[in-house]
Image (cartoon, rainbow, N blue to C red):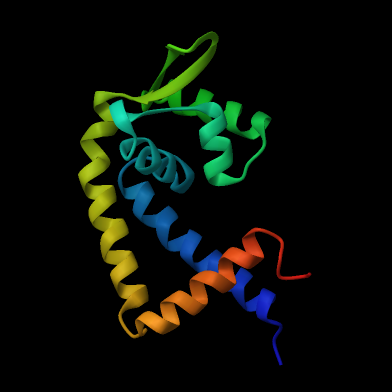
Length: 140
């Protein structure tokens, strides 16, 4: 019998592959698409690097490199944090804002397809289970 975590990893790989293919059709990577989506859901389309690190559970160095690449591609600009001039925030550019409707439509349709054959009880159970893994409580 396959282990559950192995199956989750395989499912995640498939999800990433599908998202990467769609993102490439927009001229971005899957990770960049996710960050654009994340920023587009924030006031003024901006967030701190710390918020991005927390959302995607990635290290500061990884986030820095990712944001540098996004800035180079014209997807974001870095602006001063009004609360702390030593810090920067990432803000979407007009170029990135143009692909937001396509990203939202894709994310919505993708989510609907996943939920299509599940009851609300199933969704709640799976969501709680995945959160426990994410938070490291599945091994407790």
